[in-house]
Length: 210
Image (tube, rainbow, N blue to C red; front, top):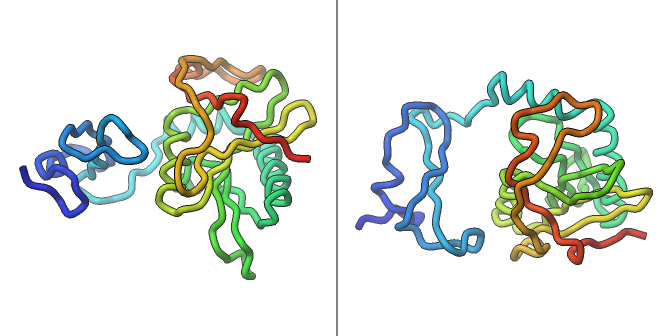
């Protein structure tokens, strides 16, 4: 069996794709990684090599889910966490490159500096369920694996500020469990995937800020 330089199976990597998107395909020939202890996956690229663009349906779903008030609350959470860490922050400008809320860095002037962490934010008005959808959780873990800096799940609950370190830059940290759960927040238009596979952060992985 031939291997690619990255260790993947050549027969799997070279499968033709009829679209111009990236696809995750199951490959039983790939050595398991730190992220996937039981099986391997190969990132399969479409013929054009172009970065996949968000489509109109996905964009409409994002608009329905994220309001201007949501963005303000996200930024407040980033501010509080940045102060706690002694870092600067940047809220994701919704460029669709990253499906997370922001990142932290050591400021060296002009908004530039050394990357120091990734962030996803939740502002709870009711019971905190500590859910993350699976693709978002995977993205945060992968970003930390690639960059060697932590990924944080930051939230506010009844006036308290909490967070979990999903990945510490070396390995996965917070305890998580897979569930099928969810729902439609009050005042939001329902989506078909409001109940879906989710990763829930176990409560003893939560840390509280003073």
